[in-house]
Length: 340
Image (cartoon, rainbow, N blue to C red; front, side, top):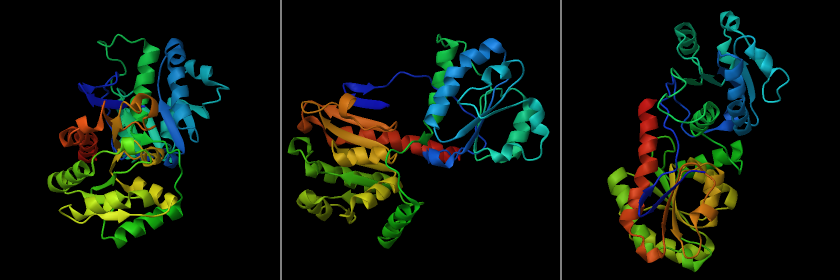
């Protein structure tokens, strides 16, 4: 779980930045359920394969319902025989099979210096293609096995792994709901706001939520979904009445809320159950924490794309703090869109 805390400046989690070359970088928070077949291309010796196997297992653990195959060279391929994470192994000769690569949903080429394979891969129009031209960063002090693990972690960050599964019917109902409210899930920057919580001590000032909404509308052209439970109706009405553009106030069954959150580009929320629901469907989150009551390290959402605004009192959290937090997930989103 990647948490970015804003209190005494930014606190970034440690990690390695990888530059990935992709022919169709459409993995913008893609549900891993769409990835059925994976191919890892790694031509290496015996020792390199032994060191790589933990990363292969990490990939299998993340894509737990996918089938993973490996293209490699002998005798390293023999090390993968009977391995529970590997469905099949292939040699280089497989590239001459007609449409061989097109049956895979995700291909990770860790031998990206081989131009012939890269040319065929790009021509195959694979749904998700990652080519690593240089496997190791010589300036990096990590052991090779840990470097492989960090590489896989960077790759899986492009996908989300839902905990609450939204059905196709629920997804269609959510889209119909949004279209009925004159919102376009593909074109509009839909941002959900949850200004309530079952614990009054975790509720940030509604006027500051209102100011955040107005800034999102003016600075980003955002369309606001104001999520409201029965006990939060008064707060929601106050915010809705004072926003420059009328938001959509959502008071719907829980499963529809989950499906709507899945359609949102971002949720800004108090520490609440809705925060965890958004995490469960893979929605990026900016959360507001009163550290005297709960800490995001312990109670933060289980999602990679998360910014926690955490101070000792809620009154100490300013609108500017939250807007600084908003910039990070939105800038990541724009970078992915620019690459597609």
